[in-house]
Image (cartoon, rainbow, N blue to C red; front, side, top):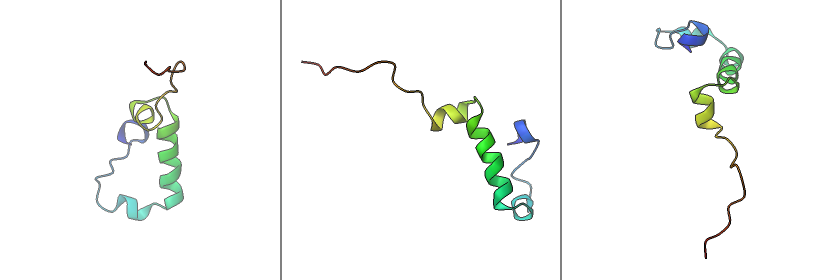
Length: 54
């Protein structure tokens, strides 16, 4: 969160001062951006159909 929004989530009381809506919007922005974390949670589709081995 710090790299994109300039927020350090380890700051005491920061998340208590923010609403769930605020946090959800920031989290959605991080997951929808092309980043390592988004690729982790949304891996790319397989390139082609896999055929079973005989």
